[in-house]
Image (cartoon, rainbow, N blue to C red; front, side, top):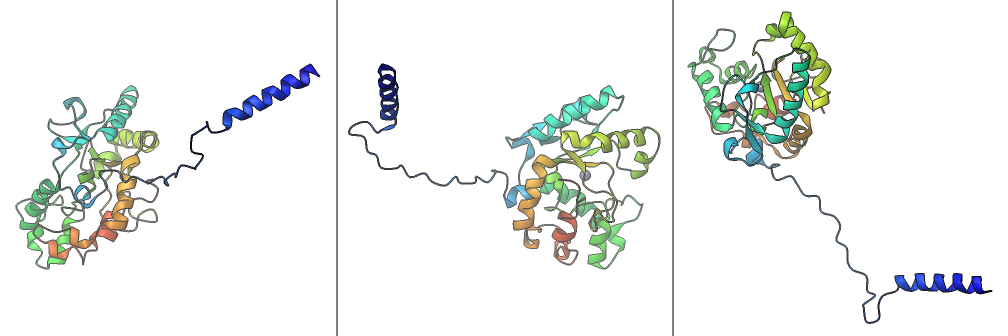
Amino acid sequence: MRVISIILLTVLFSCSETQPNPGESSKQVDVKPTKVVKPSHHNIAYLTGKFEPKKHEDFVAIPKQYADREGMFMRKDAFESFQQMYEAAKKDGIDLQIRSAARNFNYQKGIWENKWTGNRILSDGTKASDIENQVDRALKILEYSSMPGSSRHHWGTDIDLNSFDNSWFEKGEGLVLYNWLQRNAAKYGYCQVYCEKGSHREDGYNEEKWHYSFMPQSTGLLDYAKDHLETKHIHGFLGDQTAGEVQIISKYVLGIDHRCK
Ligand SMILES: [Zn+2]
């Protein structure tokens, strides 16, 4: 009997702990639904490279040991992961080198307009300015260069590695490096977004065996672009009137390897 009383008292005492204190309102507190906070860099200005990477708090200067020159920047998260990939590659005798990283709108405008006007020769030795039809001229430059405002290099998530020549990655040291990246880059969140055109990627730039993207950040940015980026945002440079006709958003911005997630 004494044992039962003790149990009963214990239960009562426990229950009383869950009751509101005298005087305290038993009214339920309204819980607001959790608001999904959009990352601060998911906006059109960021997407189109209208900022200075060196002044952006999410960016870091790439130390010379990882690059072919000083003064390049990329997102910190992408760089930290790159560092790990770089060290792992080094252990396997592979020397990764960043050749290009973040490029803002103005930087890309310089590249584009130099090609547009013929000041800069294209990689096949021709001059875009020799092509009179403006849409054809834009399409020619778009084989390898982005229109200002439409480049993934604006995002700080994308880097070009070792060589700008596909054939370098097809033999000797370049092929060893390429195969290593194909096997290992995904472990560090990196993916070659401009693979050969075919079933994995129908449209856009020619293949770029050197261009890798940090997917943990760039996937969200691409989703944002899919929903919000419009042709009217791609403007402010020579030849921008062709952006619609070349289908800059659907074919180029969205034209990446479907396997890169
Ligand atoms: Zn690139």
